[in-house]
Amino acid sequence: MEVSLEGVQVERDGRVLLDVPTLLLRGGRTTAILGPNGSGKTTLLRVIAGLDRPGTGRVRIGGLPAHASRVAYVFQEQVFLRRSVRDNLELGLRLRGLDPAERRVRMEEAARLLGITHLMVRRADRLSGGEGRRVSLARALCLRAPLVLLDEPLEGLDRPTYSRLLHELPQLLAAFDATRILVTHNPGEAVRLAEDLVVLVDGRVHASGEKRDVATNPRVPEVAEALGYFVVMRDGRRIAIPPDALRPGSGGEEFLMEVDEVVDLVASTEIAGRIGEVRVHVEVPAGSETPAQGDRIHLHADRFFELS
Image 1 (tube, rainbow, N blue to C red):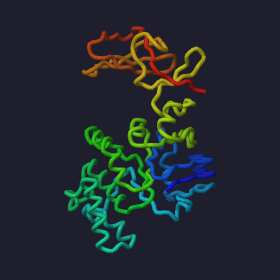
Image 2 (image 1 turned 90 degrees about the vertical axis):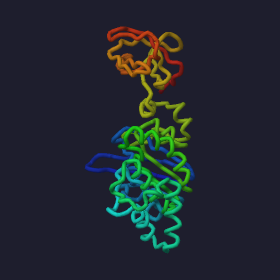
Image 3 (image 1 turned 180 degrees about the vertical axis):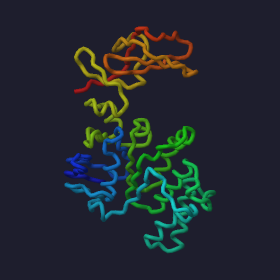
Image 4 (image 1 turned 90 degrees about the horizontal axis):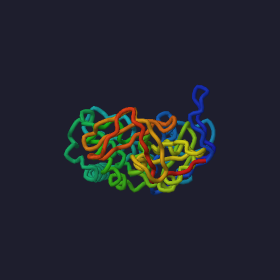
């Protein structure tokens, strides 16, 4: 089910939070809305969900107005009734008028797919962060809505839980026979979880399309920076360098950096400094000669993108 926005603008206290002349999100896919904090990502998600009404413009979901469409929304904050996981899963199904047999089938299926069968009798408000995320996803899955919206689904988790869910979430999202839209400020999450990317900065869409097309053709600094690339000037050109493409030594496109920080990461060493006005960091493999603070060293980029 595709989602389209036309002439959508949201203002609050005289400030434009969202200004989207046109945007089409393809149906049956996972799209990541990527951008820095305060870029309007959650506002865009809430407008699509029909929770916020834009001052101008319209949102269509499968050709219908947003408020007339069935949507499942997974909030960033884990909000549960102080009752069992089963009761929390069942509430939305009761509100939709499903009979007890259908409710049971849907809850059992969602619990199995999300791996929370053993949690069904637990108090939902006493779960760990990772358990709570799974329950939130199961609650949305139960609804079998054609559109699923997820607001920063991995935010606030401890590192082991984050790593586990980051790798499992693509398969979990595939369990939703739906269009899936998530927001994140983390480019690594966006690339791993989504098929399509929308880059949103200061309430405006600067790029949208298949993730490989967006990531390999950033075009403008706003997109490159949202993707986590270093944006530097070189011989009057503005270029974007993926962090993993910047390495110590000569070769390719070369730069000079003065080292202002050296961090021992045990398995490797990270050196940080500036290329012009841009702060960059590079890992030096274990066993390699490590520069000291104040040294001037050569770096090179084995791939980069020219920006307009």
